[in-house]
Each structure stands twice: as C-alpha cells, then as structure tokens.
Picture (tube, rainbow, N blue to C red):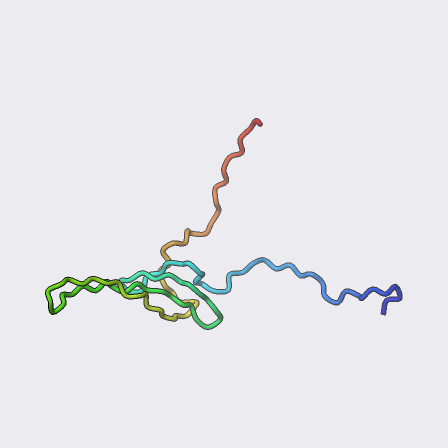
Length: 103
C-alpha cells in the first residue's frame, strides 16, 4: 500500500495492432446470387444485409397500370461468409502524394 495516499496502478496500457475480426464490414456491397446487397449491421453471430426486391408492375381490373417498389428484404448471413465484396479496394501499399516544395 502506498503511504502517499495515491492508489497504485493495477493495469498497464497494452498496445495491440488493430485486427479485423470479421471478413464483412458495415457498408460493404456484396453479391448474393444475381442480386446486390448492402451490409448494414454486424455482430458476433450474423451480418444483416439489405437486398432490394424487384419492382412490381401489373394492371388493375380497370386497366390502370400500377408500379410500386417493395421495401428491401432483410437477411442474415455469417460474418465470415465467402461472398464477393464489390466496393472494397484491394489492400496493399497505397501511393503517397508527393510533397510540394515551397510555401
């Protein structure tokens, strides 16, 4: 015990490099079959994906054409699914912009 009245430090600061825990990330665009989907949420057990449904067109009994867009469908998939991710750039070395000399 400290005699000067201060509490001793129990935990030290541990630095770890950031690791990506899951393969999918929020806002990824993925291909599911022939449709595209956007990842909106990720947790430990599932990734929630929004998939747009096809617009519906039909004619009423009174010969009026009707067109409407249904709300997106929500599906849940594994966070480590081997899906094709369309909007993420390949990871690697990025080119730096050259510094301009002068003021």
